[in-house]
Amino acid sequence: MQVLPVSLFGASVTAVALPDLARDAIAAGDAANAQLRARIAIGFRRIAFFVIPSAFAFAAIARPIIALLFQTGRFDADDTVLVAGVLAAYSSACWDSRRSGCSRPFLRLRDTRTPVRIAITSLVMSTLLSWLFMPRFGPAGIAFGSSIAWTFNTVLHLYDLDRRIGRSCSAPTGARSGWSSSPR
Image (cartoon, rainbow, N blue to C red):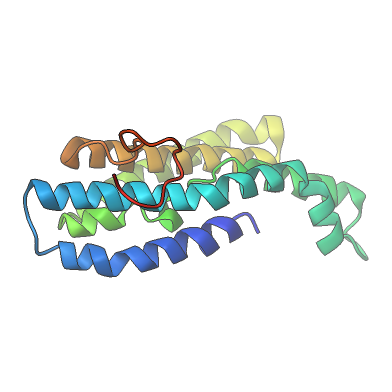
C-alpha cells in the first residue's frame, strides 16, 4: 500500500520521460546534459506534487486506512495499530528511487554499474538500520530502517547525477514556484 503513490505517479512520469531520454542518448555535450537536467527536474517536481502529500496522508491516517481495509475476523484493533505503524514508517520514504526513476538517467549516460553499487550500499544500510531499529520499534523499525535506506538511495543517485551533469533538481532560475512544468 505504501508504494501506491510512487508507483502510480512516479512510474507514469518516468515512463513518459523514457523515450525522450532514449532519444537524447545519442546526443552528447553540454546541450544534452542541460536537457537531461531539465527532464530530471521536471519529472521530480511532477512526482513530488503528488507523492509528498500522499506520504503525509498515509502517515496521518494510517490507522483508519488499515482498519477499513483489514480489521475483520482475526485481524483486531491491536493488529491495526501494529500495521498502521508500519505504513506510517514506510510513508517516510516518499522518494523510493526504484519507482521514481532515479536510475534511468544513468542509462542515458551508459552507466549501469553506478545504480548497482548504490543499490548494494542501500541494501546493506537497510539491513543494518532495520536490525538496529527492530528491538526498539518492532516491525515498524524494519520499515523505518528500509525507508531511511531508500531515501539515502535516492540522495546518492541525485548526488552522483549532480556531480556528472550539474545541478539536476534545483528550482529553475527566476521561477516563482518549484512546481513549474516547463524548464526555464
